[in-house]
Length: 329
Image (cartoon, rainbow, N blue to C red; front, side, top):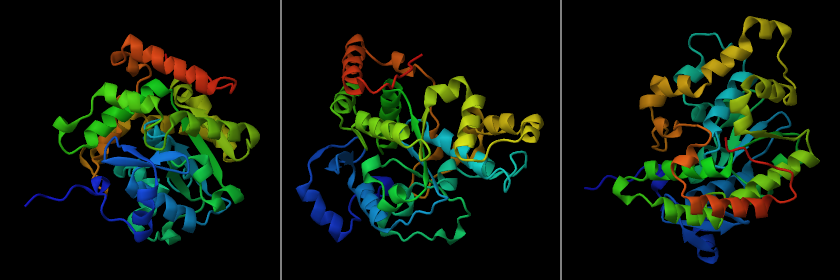
């Protein structure tokens, strides 16, 4: 008897509403599952589409909520850990030996709305969440639940340069396939990415919408660049704390709280923990799949001259006049 695939690869447990919707939506080849579908201008696999629609219909945001938003493979795991340590540093002092980040995956501590809480027809129980509630999502700005847009909920958006984002997505997609002989070639996936056909893509639409919102409504949307956190982590963490209105005190800085948060949440430390080496999420993904190299400029190990030229041209065209610049070094 063939074992059933892990939940993240299953596509048959869909609601009637979703089953009726799929045949009328544009569809293209998927990166991990069979197809991605275009809904409200973004490409999404059926299981996550169902979670996104349920979230839009049912999620009631609170003014104190904080939601981390990213395109996939932009440093989500790292920022989840940083935000958790920052926001709950009174309840969970960073120096405590059994800090939650040392024993649980950041993806358990900061759940995705559409991936985790509302997926597969689940009804989330928010009674165990302490205020401020901390969530994550990959959903484009225009597809956020109305309650998020209408409330004082704060959005922290993390963006990574598109070349490293693509390479990380390609590795991640191949890692999540059950049989590695079934991996997709980098050139095939690159062409899809350049056409905007990636999960929650097009990449540039996703980034630009949040970028514009951060300029128009800076009290609600805080825009961070992955490369800037890597380059000056202390400065960016303090900026983030100030945006969330929980700045570090002089005492905390003198006691090394900022440095310890950065150490505990560092890629090297998180990757070495037992929970992230051997643990699995309830949906079946191994935690270690979320800890790849995280280096800036890793794309240089994979891109041909033609790939580089093609993506440079697309990025220049799509982001022209926006004021947004990417760092590749």
